[in-house]
Figure 1 (cartoon, rainbow, N blue to C red):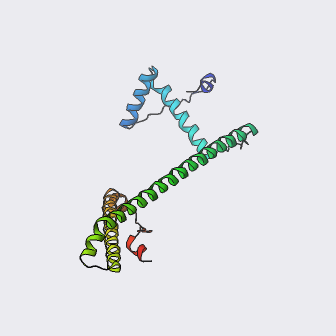
Figure 2: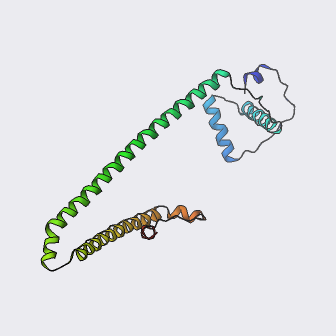
Length: 198
């Protein structure tokens, strides 16, 4: 019982009430008595009834707390925190952009070197052998283009196979989640071959 309730004199009624507790209620009351060192059950039951009645009154009469406007100092601290976070995000974005730019440059260099090496080997070893076989320059160029297209088809096909495997793995992982919720939006798939044809 709260100290406020304990300090006031309250009159007891002459009426004696018999309460048949549920087993779980009796167990909980016994545990409270042991925890608080209370020897008599009646005062504890009166205290629990007081708490229950007070909770019911609070439920019936909702107390609206007056809105407190944040102080100017609080607002300025929040704005400074937001500003610091935004500056950090901008910095991270610039770093990510630099990394992406460097990655693109390295990829371009790698592709240029690979093509230059391939052309050098083609010109040094394959073209002389094809000319000895009587192939013309346009036929040799056409053969080079055909070999390039074949390599591209292999690379795009391999990428498509890897993508299919990854999607299958993702589908297995999220199968239970998709079963619970309808996938109304569907999945956006990228088709490398159709993109090349455009």
